[in-house]
Length: 128
Image 1: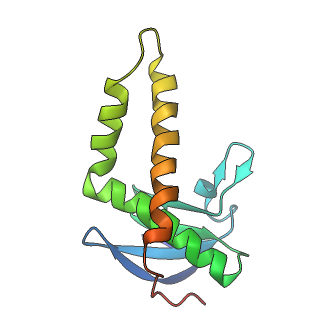
Image 2 (image 1 turned 45 degrees about the vertical axis):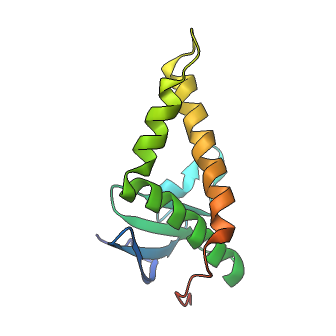
């Protein structure tokens, strides 16, 4: 994986037995940090197997962002994301579109991640 010019590699975490690089970047350097009109604090890029945190956060917030995205990576890398997604989609209401069911899944995963993130011991990765 190539780090965009100006972005910084902060280290590596092992998530579900996969070495996952942690990168600090701006939204311009890593477009995955943009979701519609919002600029995210972080993102877990499953295709690149990388966690990206937005540049400019204070160290505590940056650690929280790494932990939050680590849970997303864990769900994807372990296969749990597919299990949960399949379960949520199998419970579609009559007449509910696939797009609405997918949005319901996305919201459900985010709730799981927000509940699980504070339970992760503080990341031992030293962020510079």
